[in-house]
Length: 194
Picture 1 (cartoon, helix red, strand yellow):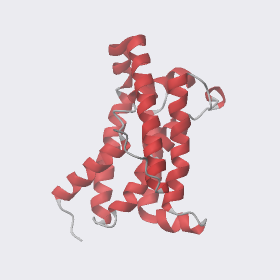
Picture 2: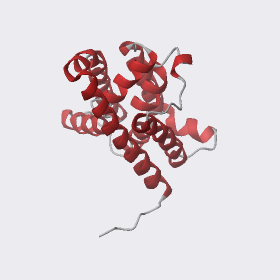
Picture 3: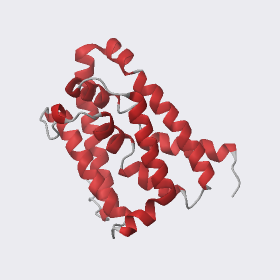
């Protein structure tokens, strides 16, 4: 397959929506509050390395452990569920004070390089060339770095009350994403409520 600009833009938009780094700003601010400053460069590089690894050897790696993509996505949905509960309820599941590398966990993985983005990368391989996905992913990681560096500015603009409101709202969105990820990979369909 050849690499076309229009394909790179299409894949970029899909990955941008799934990674949703701009939507993660409230969680990033909450993480900074709990564990101190985060290293934008380290978080971006680790997430990029994980996603690149998944692009090139994701499916065979999971098959090595007898894990399919759906099971991996379901496991990731539980991690996102607990992150969302932390934000909404204000309780702590992850011990941040013992977490010296919060830039890696839970920021780089599973928030940036999570089950959703990993499964999306594997799905995209069916329609686009490896190089198209590589370029689109690289552009997304540049954007991730810029957003992570700009969180201080956002923090100053919003203030403590704005951050608290955004944290609660994003926590609910994170819970909804976790539930959607769980349902779409288990095949469970909720009845439509009028």
